[in-house]
Image 1 (cartoon, rainbow, N blue to C red):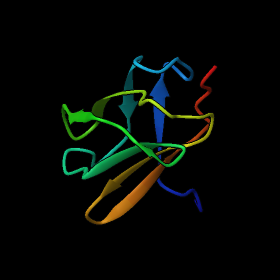
Image 2 (image 1 turned 30 degrees about the vertical axis):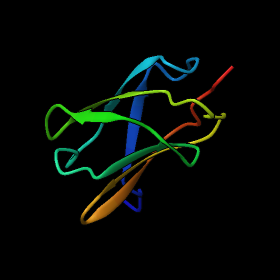
Image 3 (image 1 turned 135 degrees about the vertical axis):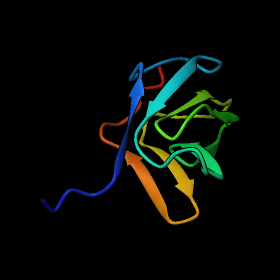
Image 4 (image 1 turned 180 degrees about the vertical axis):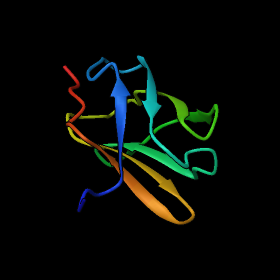
Length: 81
């Protein structure tokens, strides 16, 4: 279909320290999560879900999940007030 691999964040906005669910595919082997380039702490729950915390210094932008075979970018920009 021509769609790039992506992830969805729930919620789609939050302040520093907010817990965020990241949904997608092939996430169990994730090696990093960033919020607009700022590294976040995260836990891979399953192949379809990661939990992460909005890190200090994060700004509005896309969330990226890096795994050994691909990098997944959020389908919408995550809003940091």
